[in-house]
Image 1 (cartoon, rainbow, N blue to C red):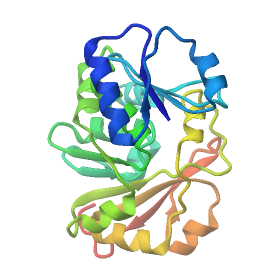
Image 2 (tube, rainbow, N blue to C red):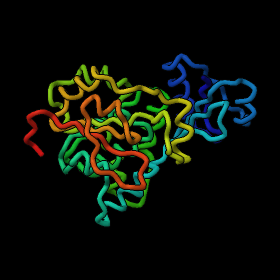
Image 3 (cartoon, rainbow, N blue to C red):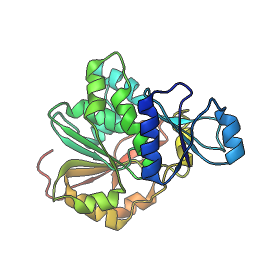
Length: 264
C-alpha cells in the first residue's frame, strides 16, 4: 500500500497522509504530479490518496477508484420525504429516537437512511472491518454536502468504528441497540452500482454464523435484520424470516425478532 496526496494538496494533507501511512505500516510517497494510472501499473500496489475534499483508494486491477458517495441513500431519503415507504426501514420497524447498529457499513448508505429516520434523538453506529474503507467513509460522512441540511446532519451523526462485528458485539452490554443490521456483500450479486463495484476489491466476505446471531440477539433489544439475496436457505436455517419484498427486487430483508419483544 502506498499513501500519497492529490496533485493539489495542502500541508495538512501531507501531515494526514504521513499519519495514515505510519498507522497502517504503509509507505508514504510524495505525489510529484505523477499519473496515478501509470504509478499503479509500475508498482502493482494499491494507492491511497488523501484530499481535503475526500480520500480515494485506487487498485491496480481497477479503472475506478473507491471513494465516498451517499449513493442511493440520497434518493431513498428524498422518496421517504415524499411519503414513500423504504423496505429496509419497514423491515426494521425503525422509528425516531431508536438506536441502530449497522454491522457491515460499506458505503454507509443504509446507515445514512437509518440515521435520518432515528433523528437527532437516535443513535447510529456503523462498523467496517477494512481500515481503508473505514477512513474514506468516515471522512466522506463529514465533508460531503447535499442541499438538504437534515440529510447532512444524518451523515455527521453516524459513529464509524473500524472493527469486525463479532468482536464489537461481544464488547456490548445486553440490549445495547434497538436494531442490529447486517448487509453482507453478496457473493453472487445483482448490484450494478458504479459506486459499489470498486468496493469489491477491498471488502471482506463474511458469512453470518450461529455464534454471530447469538451475540446479536443478546445485544439487540428488538430485532436483527439481514439484507440478502433471495431465497437464502442459510438464513432460514438460522431462524430468519423473509419479509414481503418487491417483485422486481433480487434481494430481501430477513428478520429475527427478539424473543419476548414487546416494544414493537
